[in-house]
Length: 145
Image 1: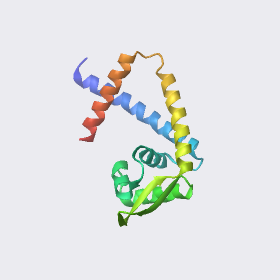
Image 2: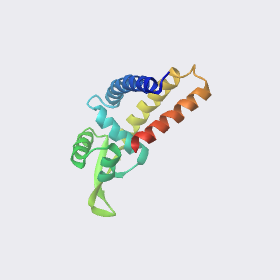
Image 3: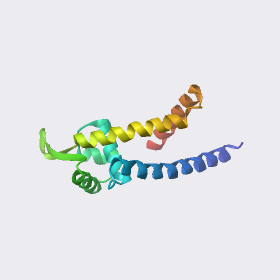
Image 4: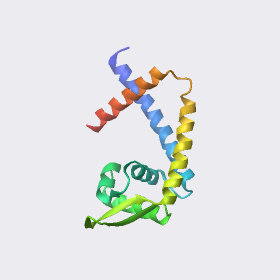
């Protein structure tokens, strides 16, 4: 297969995967809280992985501007899933973190999602999964550049 055909096939398959991912993100977000949106879930995911995070760093990790991140944060604060406090080390900065309820809900949904994903991949060989993970990691690294 010519290289351009292979690249086109990769683009088609990635598009399918991204569309599916958007649907899954919507479903996962609403499982955490009925009023949570997919973008809000991304914010929760970053906080779950990084712990308390300054607003500016949160914006950078989400790839959003500070005002959009501020609006997202305010929404999930209203839902009781996140709290925003003054950073003790710099009173000009805000520190955002999951509440206990936010952590509990996020962890429960993530565990269910991971179990579901493991079931999808249960028939795959471990070596194939390792290759897929390596190639996806490589692609993400190349896309970050």
